[in-house]
Image 1 (cartoon, helix red, strand yellow):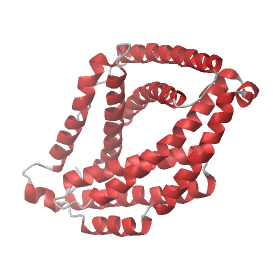
Image 2 (cartoon, rainbow, N blue to C red):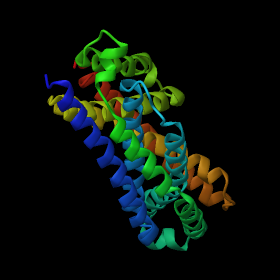
Image 3 (cartoon, one colour):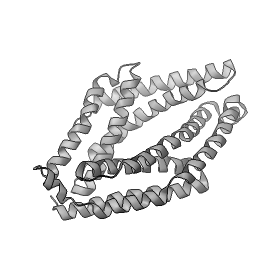
Image 4 (cartoon, rainbow, N blue to C red):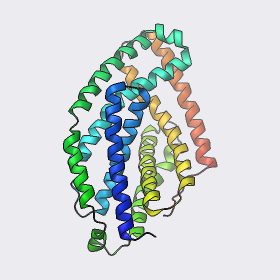
Length: 281
């Protein structure tokens, strides 16, 4: 187990690295509005928030609320464009490029994307990156892991273990009912909980020098199924807000129903053949 000074140095480096990656991708998206770049920025914002949350748990002084609020708003803003892009890919793959391009759905989504790009551009420009950068760097400079021992008799491994157990608890609660058809809310909760636990384990692996590769791969597989099923939910919400011909809407709905059933069958098989369990730190 590394000593406190080593843990402090590693965690400070991780916090700063995730923040700088977020800023880099913000600049990239402002230039490109590319689907992959938008996805990467959204993931980077979530990963930074995961490090920020752990910082709050480990430090006795945590001025993170303003930073977290700004980054959370950024995450949410990017979600709209991401859903539009993913829906275009989804329906185009299942109807053919030419057919989709000539459809009302295809033209409508293209127009919607243009509006979302403009909206995101405004949010990215108004993102107070210089002010937030100063706050984050002060947090890094102030970070002192000795405060853990000042406020708690628990060792660092014990603290990390307790955080891990707390993050696994909602997974344990949602897992038994997540494979039941119609239990979309439970699958949504499970997806979010798995994502948070996965990010935590990735951070812990770097800080504590532990190998969590096997459980991380398992979590990625679960997250893949749950994420794609959540996409279907988002596509349904998106299409409900569009004015489409009845024939196109019914065709799109049939595609989504079939995909959702296929994904649920795959997820149920995964849960049965490769059950998810708590991994002790």
